[in-house]
Length: 66
Image (cartoon, rainbow, N blue to C red; front, top):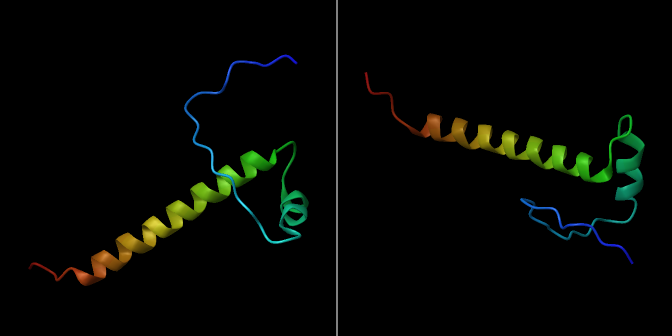
């Protein structure tokens, strides 16, 4: 069995999804997008969305200093 060099600079997270999730992911992937690429893009988008929400909430909690 031939093994290549292990990839570097990657964290791995095993995950479980409800039944049917993989089929739903496959149905919306574009072009030659891999499942990994789809999941990476989805996670990045969610991190960005939550970061914006947290910043907005903090801005609302901060009193104006005028």
